[in-house]
Amino acid sequence: MVALYFVLFSLVSSLNSGFAYIIGEKKTLDLPIEYHVRGETTDLVTGILTPFEAWYSEENKKSRNDVYHGLVKTYYIGEDEDLTTVYKIHPITTEMVTNEIQCEKDYSADDTPKIFPAGDNFTYSGDVIYYNKAVQVWKLLEIDEKRKEDTMYVYTNEDGEDIPVWRELKVYTEWSGAISDHVIVHYFDFKKPNYEDLNVTLVTECEDVLIVSGRHEHSSSQVDETFHGYKMQHNRNYKGEEHRMRKSIFEENLRRVIEHNKKNLPYKLTINKFSDRTAAELAYLSATRPSDPLAFGSEPFPYSEEEVNQMVQDLPENYDMRIDGVISVVKNQASCGSCWSFATVAAIEGAYARRYGDRLLNLSEQSLVDCAWGFTNMGCNGGFIESTYKYVIKHGIPAENEYGTYLAEDGMCRLENMTDVYRIKGFGRVPPQSINAMKVALYKYGPVTVTINADPIFDYGNGIFYNVKCNDRPLNHAVTIVGYGVRDGATYWIVKNSWGEDWGQDGYILFSTLNNNCHILDQAYYPIV
Image (cartoon, rainbow, N blue to C red):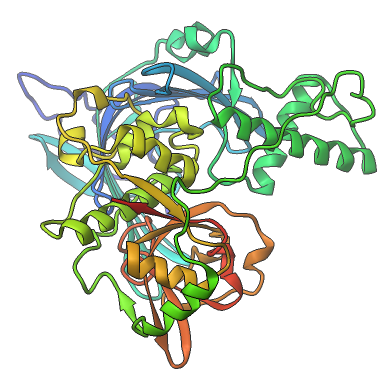
């Protein structure tokens, strides 16, 4: 890195000076390591504006980030160089409680996150006037698989620290030049932290029950991180084959705990000192647990296999509901595991437009994130399509313009204050692994919500997607089928995703109909309006 030296700009005088400046030789960028700051993030790709308040202490290896004026609070505690404990406090609403504050506990192998970026590779680029104040401009350019442009405005305070007041981050796909991320952050009200604000033990909701949070996807790395924390907590020291055996038992129990706790029943399971024990070791404690019933729709699929095979002969070769104008715009779930809500809402919006034809609805995914906890869902930590449709039958979905914009966070349920909600009469399940039944359901009922394995599709650009190994991985993502077609003799499903219009083919992916690709025909539900 080239060291740049220069004489700092003259002190800017003001009757209400928010900044204090130092005159002298310019040093390298020296960002604070102990701070409390407020700010506002604007994501120009998703359109989400997020007010935040953050605390960071490098000395104590702790940080905290509150968003939406304390609606969701996240504490990070660095246990060692390989482990960070994460506490997330947010509201949940079930059939038994409304907006009850819940505390979740999780583990991460990442460092304690900072709100200010690392300043090592930034280069001084001159001065500008920002809100009538002279500030320094620092820039970072990184080119790898993507092009990253990072620009910060800073001032130097009386302690010699460079304090950011504005930041713009742009990330481009290098080969196409398309922008994939564009975020602007305004920082204000910088001060030193009150360390009690970083003390999670003072949070009442985290005193008694801390649950291990369920993620939308459970990768092997996440299991490794959680198992590492478990071993530290319980002083386990396994080696060789025993380590592999204990981890396998732990992973199975972890998944069972997460799935159970998503149901928000009157009792919860937890990870404890028995979670890595074999069945033989726990024989005196174990008991038979009933299996969950198979999930079916509220209304049976009305056609036999013979009828379906006859009906499909009369269907068009290509059927795209987007052409009919009944499919709403592609939305963006952002960094929240709420694909289940987006896929459900997309199908209901399309079904209403087909049935009533007057206008496209813009229903609130956030209302499902906030209010559907009592139906085995866990907000930004995932949910189930079948149970979500049951929720909509009972409670309905309000329009976004009345409920409020999408937050990409677990928020307060405000359903009682809505004047209008949109309900469904029921929902059906498409017979599994039947291409013809799916075509009939699309043509007769409208969009169909499906669950897939999404691991191989992150880098999808265009064309008819098929991955022979896709079915080797479990289901982990919900999307919406809005039609089907044929191209060069290959048939495909037209699938609407919730990763924004800048992903795939304007937010869509074409899935091959071959071999139940990525489990797309295993769990498929359509709303009845």
